[in-house]
Length: 533
Image 1 (spheres, rainbow, N blue to C red):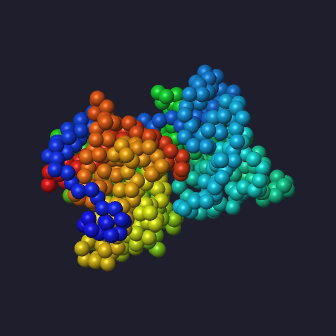
Image 2: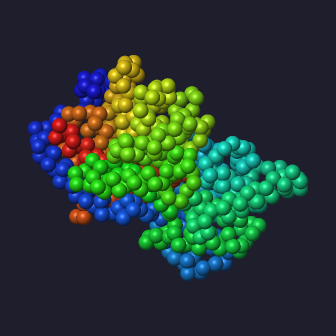
């Protein structure tokens, strides 16, 4: 990528490299070595990096409500209420939920504004989940809302299926939905409701006792609220409550999920494999990842879930190929077959199931993970999707993240995989890259860092992801300011802290603190490698 191309397309060329390149490299190398050591000691004997997800207001409130309904565990109720009193809401939904649970006046208008619209084809489902959460908290206003029976039937991710089933039961029980007033007397409707109730019980009973269902606390909680309407106090209820109460972390709150060790280990493994002195540790992490591949050839986000997805599979294939493509060939081949089977006919890759709307992060990940020589018929349309998804300002829809630099990094890394023979695609990708680099140049904050969006304060994750992008895709850029920002954020133990950038369900943020270390190490590896070259 030439400076002239960046300037002509985006109107903003990268700053020229400063003369202090050696000092820049040595500073980045020292910072890199400190964070690598800090990250390495967090890997356990199996080779897994098992960070805890921070507590979240939504799940904590739903557990408190459930305990009140079941008249269970008064001490846990007190502790959850204390957590909600000190927790800082992230967004309008969390703010009104806290107010409702603490008995304060609240206004849901800001929460409902703009709901039901989604660029990733899930608007009706998201609105139904929002209505369900508000309804459980006693906040659902009058007005037309999605009827759960209007969503589907179609194959869904396992937690989506369970949540839709639970929402159907809850909306029927409380009369929240838009079903006709005579529905309660309709024999067909009653039979459908009974089938949903039986399905909910079968799904919950199929998972190991006293474990968070599929590792997803939010889905488990909504399901237990539905179960309470017709089987209060049953064994499934008691076991579920026990698992969720035990899931609370040091902050006292209930997290969104019980772990993300497969995803985090794959990302950290790539970063540590590129850091000197950690090859043996990275190899052990690779063995761990290979051992958790599922029967369909894919990977899920943690050890317990049965739901595989494109993102985790692409990350794991990328890691295993980096480590040893020969040694892990069977796992890599299985992962590639999994990804091929998920590709949509019109181009692009969904998160979970073929035929679902394509997702930007998933599509970029598949382009990175699949060798072009063997998959050009899938990857060329996927690249068309990536290029076509760029907004006028050079950014992309963030989808599974809050950070625009995060998705820019993933997309530009994918576009760099286009082979030289694809001249037209490479030229269009170069123009797309230049526009994205122009966006980063314009959105950098005065402190040298980047925030999730141009109106947000700088944070470590967004800055590390922007830095990693500039190093690889805008060579010659002056990196002194973002490096100085990161150096100022590094703790004495070598680690970093950031605001969360992952979301689930979209757009609710959740936090795995170790990802700040992982992404920063990834960026610093690139800085050291490029400045050394």
